[in-house]
Image 1 (tube, one colour):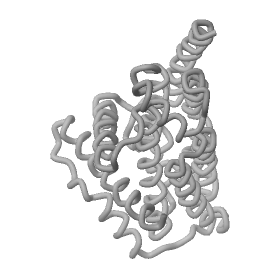
Image 2: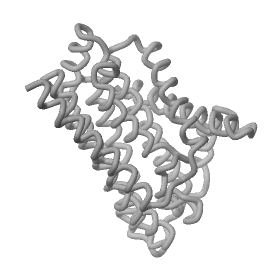
Image 3: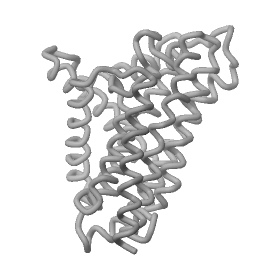
Length: 281
C-alpha cells in the first residue's frame, strides 16, 4: 500500500505538470516542463518552514495531515472495491479541509478562500446524481460490483452518459486553474493555500496529487470499468487532457456564476434521474 501511495503521488504530481503544460500550449505559451510540480514539491520539502503568529497552530498543521489521510483512505477504498458512498464522503470531507485550511491562518486572503469553499459547495451536488444514476443501473454502490456490471453490460460512460457528465463536472471543479477554481483565484493571492509554506505546502501538494489520482481513477473505474494499470493510466491521461483543454479555453467564473451553473447542471440531471426512474420502473 505504501508503494502504491508513492506511485499515486508521483503520477498525480506528473499529471499536475501535464495539466499546466496543456493549458499553456492551448493558450500559445511554452509552459513549464511536465515534471515541474514534482520539483516544486521537493523544493518545498527543504525550504524554511514556519507557522504564522495569527494561526491556530494545531489546525494549521493538523489540516495538512488530515488532507493526506483522507485521500490515502480514498485510494484504499478504490483498490479494495469499496462503496462509492465512502469515496464520495471523502470528497465531502475535502471541502471541510479546504475551509479549515483557510480559517486556520488568520490571513484575510485565506479567509476569503475559506468562504469561497463554502460558496462552491454546489459542486458537490452532482455527486448525488451520480450515485443515484449508478444505482439505477447496477443495483449496487460497490465499486467491485460496478466494474463487474460493466464487464457484462458495457461501460456506464455510454449507458449512463449524463451521470458521467455529472462526475466530470465534479472533477473539473477540483482542477487547478479551472473555471470553478474560485478558492485559489489570483485576486486573493493563492486563496486558502496562501500561508502554507515549506514542508506544510509540500504536504498539501502530496495530498492534492493523491486527490487528482483518486478522482481520475475513480472516473475510469466507475464509468469505463476495470482495466490493466497501463491502460487505466492512459484513460486517466485522456480525461485529464480534456479537462485541461476546458480549463485553458474557459475563464475563471465569479463565485455566484459558479454556483448558478453548477446548480443548473444539477437540476437538469435531477430531471434525468426522474425520467430514468419512471422508465426503469
